[in-house]
Amino acid sequence: MNAMLRLLAQSRSQAPYLALGLLISLIATLSAVSLSGAAGAVFAGVSLAALPLALRLLGPARVVLRYAERMITHDALFRATADLRVWFFRCIAVRMAGGLGMQRAGDLLSRLVGDLEAQDTVYMRLMLPLAGAVILLPLLALSIGLYETTLAVLVCLLFALSAFILPAWAGRAALANGEALAQAMGGLRVGALDVATGLREARAFAAEDRMLAGVQAREAALLATQSRAAKRVAWAGAGAFIAAQAAILATLVLGRNQGAVDVGLVFIVLAAFEAVSLLPRAGAQAGTAAAAAKRVLAITDAPIKCPDPANPQTMPASSALRIEAVSFAWQPDRPPVFEDLNLDIPEGHHVALLGPSGIGKSTLAALLLRLAAPQSGRILLGGTDIAGLAASELRARIGWLSQATHLFDDTIRANLLMARPDADDETLWHALTQAQIADAVRALPDGLDTYLGEGGLRFSGGQGRRLALARALLSPARILILDEPCAGLDSETERAFLQVLAEATADRTTILIAHHLTGVERLDRIYRLSAGHAMAAAG
Image (cartoon, rainbow, N blue to C red):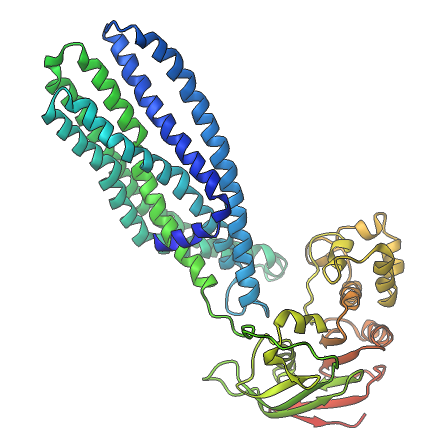
């Protein structure tokens, strides 16, 4: 419950609407029970002048109240879920700024979608009927106790069993099974996503059947877990049904001496138990939701690798970079990437960092962007240690074009505006011209409003790189880190791209990370990374 309450607190802006929905739900429940009692009295032949009027008022009131409650609560829940997703995304954006790391995309998607959606059921299917049960229990005791005390005690005990005890039992059982259910669902999403994204390779190696068998095995594991959960829900539901029937039978038997009152009491008991009949299932769903909430909090409560300082320093005017005696390892039990690394990059210089894969070139980019922090030493920007700067301001000064730059499944315009949301069309076209991709975009029927497709699949690798470069150039960043910008390009396309790059970044500090040089780069300094150190190389 603590985990669910913490998630609920993230949607506190919807609390007034949820409270209003709860109030209307309680009134609607009382109207429904009162309507049943009045109908039973009329059916039994009780002649009270107020009964016809009560039926005329309570019938429409119940319908209108239920409709109003559904409209208010559903709208509030949709908004609350949106708030939760925004909050969750912000949490992972801070904690995974450098990528997902060891977190698999399918599992993260499962938490973002399934685990957060599970929280909806807690309010609609548990909290509303549970609040109604709290109101109905004393109402039953009072209504029946006026005629037969023994009957009132028995019916209230059966009602408590149906509304409180069985849902609690189902919830505890579901909580124990909830983590396994969530993991099975996440595993299925991981497998399905792997197959969908790797279908081309699977077909190339004739491995479709094997991969499909893996997905089917995960699906079978999910179904087995769901089956175990469904059995517990079925037992709880059966218990609630038997309790309701026993209460009705007891009312008929013990209340037989009350004459015409019997039918009215039976209708009230029937309506009360009907109002809480789904609580055992809701209890199980709440247990599953509690396990899902724990999975969400496992991500959002993870420590931030490089938190902002309590009192960030003012950004320096200079953009000169200096790395002093930096040592860094990704894990304590892994060999260090850098040991006593020293590097000097004056403002406005173009510098190349060369070395084979795994030598630490991309790690250095992560350190400069403060996606990771050195274990010792410091990195200075304009003479100020970047550990004392706000991450958002630092990353506004340093732009990054990674070797696997992602183009979103949106328009060219939307992809470019990520770097500068206030840019007008003239500014966008200027960036495209600098990246020498403007003519290709103008030739498209929709121009800037052309959709790129998932991962930019409608464009070639070279065109995609140029679009990514145009986006980087739109950024006001005065320092550009270009991490293997030509990865995957053929030699001719690579040389053309680097020539464009040199011209487009002439007025910015540029750090080019690469395996090798082609000879067309315009560089002020060249460093080669080796054994955790940087050595100056001949130009």
